[in-house]
Image (tube, rainbow, N blue to C red; front, side):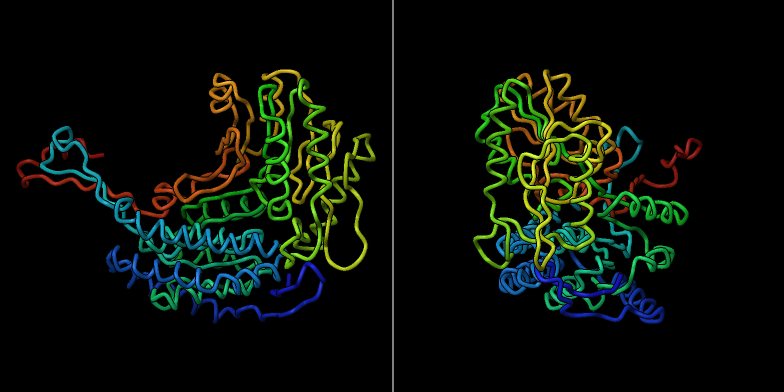
Length: 470
């Protein structure tokens, strides 16, 4: 795939880049490793000053950064502006909280026959981030902010259709004061990932992307004995029970399905509705979806912009046609638009069966699958009946049901009476084929730390547990 900015609203290639040579790549890794030797010796307070400066730059240059994101992958300009602001918020969150997250944690010294025992969190080195195009700034920042604040350095292999976003973030960290090479964007194709991860100077990797990409990274890292964090696909359930506020659920469902033009791993995709409120929800939901404005993503009145690629749009339409051709009902949308750009209308499909692709596959576009169930137990069975387990939503005003959903939904995130989203304050990640490990919160920072046990005795005479070492 060429490294290029192609405007999804027009299909026009705006800017292309030459991939790094092997020599350039090796030099970039060397710079990032040298930057680690410097960054790891700085104080948390110094790193916080640099991170706050990065946040200030993001805020000051928000509109231009947003324009680049919209041009590269098609999200609405309004959504892109919000994404930049969210990144600045996350940068400040880690600048403020890192001293507490990285502070030594005391242990029970007497229990381990020490005068002092504690846990110390230290950086591990250069971390490779393989990131997707759908949230081209946020996906990177939620790795970069905690990693840099911990004293690690980062190599970014971004999606090949968002090179300008990758380079601008490298520039932001450099201008904020981080050592040269502390965060480096690598203009390389996916074929270079094995070489990068195999380099002994690279100590770990994080990936947000597809299942095949995750399996590939995990296989390479396993061979090299390197830590990985994987956030993969999702086919999130959105369960609506009889006690729910149906109007509010249908309103949030529309946003939950079409956020980022429907291209989000944690977008609600399978809407599982109790039969007692199914018809009312389906009518309101389909009407809301049909009313969304599809068009120029730079227009502030646009609700849904183009999909990021022609191939992606073709795949979404193929999934919808497969369902319709096999007996599903299309309540709205489902027709491939004519004209320039890779647009697709908000679409609602119901009467799905296990033989249809939409029953089990993730649909990465503004397309909702609607499922009718007759009980709580059936709702859980359908919700968990997928290989994914990233986010989930449940709508009920029954406190007992809320508690059951919190326990029974097989996902890394459960949001009750609200839309799944990611916050710096909360850990984020999945189970099953949606990956492993966590981003955000203190857990996300500590994923790429050496959790070091320190045991201090009075001297050789009191070290006496040696016979039972380990």
